[in-house]
Image 1: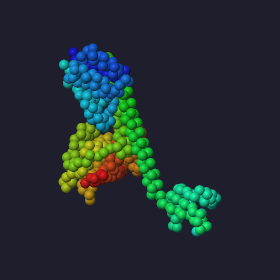
Image 2: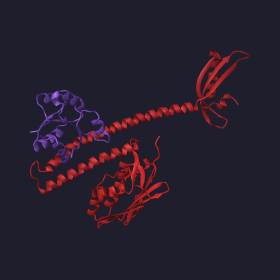
Image 3: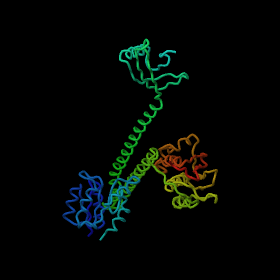
Image 4: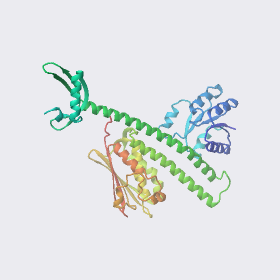
Length: 121
Length: 318
């Protein structure tokens, strides 16, 4: 089963994404801040990471860099999943160079799954 | 003419006091305002030296500071505006983010419910879910549109000017709307002058404007359908593009309100016809940003015509 780490600090949004992914045959786990995400990524090798950008302890870019500094995660895709959805945000975020893709909130479940299914193992 | 005739700020007593002090200390430098012969008031800086020779002599140098003062004020005002604008942009970015976050859960869970991921729904529950979904999606478009409008108003939108081929761009928009038009029994007609082969504009924004006009024309058609005619031709150095419909029309007293934000003529309109009520306000701003004009004519009960005038050649921005 494809293992997904969902980093999201808003409980309802975390539950939503976990609910969608687990309902579609993924094994999705949630982390509510950067520190927890880094710890979880050390304990288990995930196949995909969905990363919120604003977290209580650090931003998603910092958390992603920390996770990717582990060699095992070199080729693991990290997708930014963010409510920063004004014009230009996508380009600005992808330009940070640490994300493999970008999705904006609110998500449309059909579009969301289309994107995520590409990473299914 | 004595000093009190030209002095605009200080009273006679103040002038006397100042002269007395200058005679004691020997000099002074100060700013004040003087009246010129033609009555105009100027800002001046005066340097006065007093020498106790030949019964006492004053040496006065005066500099016209009007221009310098004005520049200074302008610079301060500009700095204030830049700061205010930055604060506004930051506020909008935060607001967009904060509103989208809870909407993500509202829309997402509604979709899950509708997809019966939490069990079967009865007919009423399904209708309620549809209402929640369409309202929250409407809210998302409102957020997007409000931010768009505010960005245009704040001059934050930079146009990317390129050559846009006609009638290709017009047909592209019609293709996007053909399905909706068919549903409402609306037929498209085009009358495009072949001499109008291209205009210079921002492609994305041009499409946004035209899409708005044509989708309005389709939206406000009469119950039994109608005809939407798009005409395009050259008029002087402008491209004149009109979108006419045979729809419900607009009362004369309401024509003036059309391009104001949130001015769908009647609040019940947005429930019946959808839309954010910001489309025309945004379109007007975008047209004016291009150096163009937009206007509306209408006969209530017969239909409306929206006319777009856009420069064929874009003005170069400095």
